[in-house]
Length: 376
Image (cartoon, rainbow, N blue to C red; front, side, top):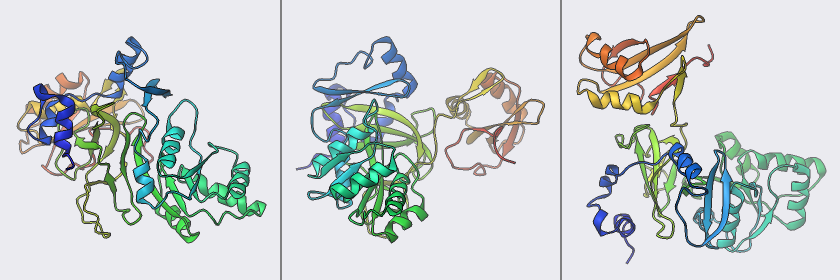
């Protein structure tokens, strides 16, 4: 019988830390990338841990070091390829980078896991990509969403036939509807997946479901208020926190630094598995003003410190002479003087406090909004 996610999590945590419900996961601390950077700098490469069975060590920007353990589909992207119809008999042109970062290895191991042949082309050089794709009979593409179209355009210029390509497994960039449709018009099923070097695959589209992404069976996804570990109401945008249920390399409550939300609508395809809506921006909203940082966790602490504040948002703008800070507070209390001392203690910077109606601030996951570079 298949174990529930709670049972699998408790098997990792051990009996002395076992949780009664998945909601109790919110009582455990969140690890963020800046903490991981500090840990790894103090005890390289992995922060003092010693994973067993390491086969590869990668370096992502930061620098952050990641390990691959074993020789199988460690990052689990093979499930995504299976869901969109790829498998044995396919020839996959893998244009993700193979050096330092694990993107190339992620899709290499995924393609091998489903029985496909891999052509490891890496990024760049569209003319050679088109030549190799035609010569090797490539049927599937793995890479960023827009690079495939550049290859197809080059192939057309050079008179090469790439009509054998029927699948595109894309990530690491936006897949705009018009681009997806352009591929469909060329007979290519293009679907996207969402994951990171730290935690592997988080969610994916299927052959029939493009209304959000299905959450992977081997992870628990939480959406929390940025800078905190507190879950937001279901359907609201917040910071993505991931727990990986891999006994060989478990990861508990790791923030990937992105914003997303749980999908709340019914999917036209009939998909019933839990979904997220996809990438909605970065959660690391720290903004420097007059040499000091304003961080989202400060804003969350302000809300938690007063029962009279329902929600808060800091907006930083400029009048051409200097920076302006406005702290907007949702509250039934209209007297701003009640909050001014609290806000000053939080920011240590001169600011304007504005009380707004409860429910009027956007539910977009943004706690610190820097408007200084926004177009007019």
